[in-house]
Length: 472
Image (cartoon, rainbow, N blue to C red; front, side, top):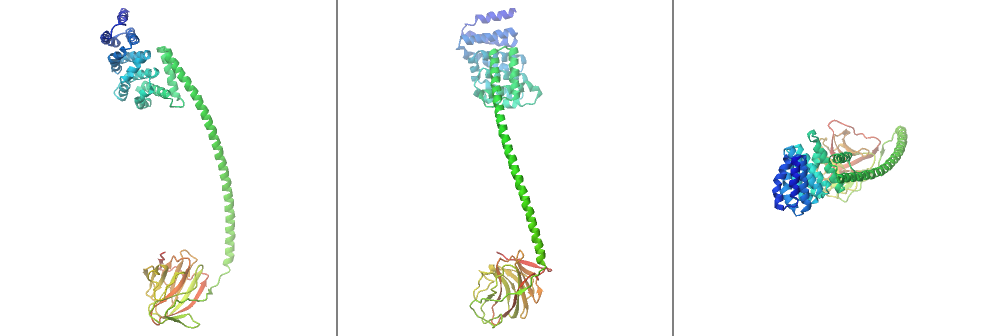
């Protein structure tokens, strides 16, 4: 009691002293904050506040000579020293906006950030630093001055370390208050609401600071209002969502109706297919018969002769001559039989229906070779200059036949020599083709024996068969 009275007398006498005397008191006041009792600490704090109110010019001295040591003390590893400095700073900030501004301008926020980032900082130091920051916020410090703390506050507020539970709680409070100040969030989270409520009770019971309590109450009331607005918005969004769900259900119903219609169409399609199958079975009993097709060849001007009433063509020179049969083969199965009367090096083939080879030109050379394929005398089959061997050689007196099947895909052309099917055939014929033969020596002679339409192919799968692909 005596010591307290001595402190009161000493500090009362120095309220109106000079700035130099104020500087002389600093060591004594710091020592009192560290070692003095609660009453002494209270008197020291009052002395500082009184000085701030009576001499505005002394604020800079306080900042330079007193606030800086207090900032160092609040980060002390000794809990008692840290708490004493924290209480002094909180009181000074709450009583004087000049002290608040001086503390911020002196770099306290950055210093606090370093202390919170450093994992070696004791729990009590972190807690006391956060209390000072909280007081700055409640003393209406500019939130922009706190931007350097956002990241570390986020990290601290999500910490699961039980030893730092109190620090985590305070970090959440500060983070929420900053959000409140900046009005960035639409509603207060439940845990932030609880933190603010707890803090209000704590401040009321321990400090009785009516202004701060009222501010907190106002903030809570404001965010309760915002919470109601949010609930209203959520209700409207739910209404819209329900409407969208109703539309989705309607679309699903329409989709189900379409599926039912598709199923009905499928059933009708199956019935039609069944009827077609029945008709095909009935028609299969009526076998088509082969029939002859009149033979006609439009000969290009050149050196050849044709016997009257026969389809025999004889070369009268050494010019190349190509003889296409006029019948265009589009659909069906065709078989043309030809007798080699006397030919040195004959070949027989299939060409595009529009191809015309002038007299003296060979269908095996450019630009004609890409539009036809042929079976050559030496057993090779050619298309577009590419040949594959494997067929029997042709001689004078042989009867050869070319069977073109336009009912399969890919379309095919098979060769028969004296009734024997040859293994090398042509596949991939164009949509419209003609059969042709080619002679090029004097006295070469060929006779077209027949051209028939067949109901079924006579060509079958044989051993070692191989196809040459028509290159488009």
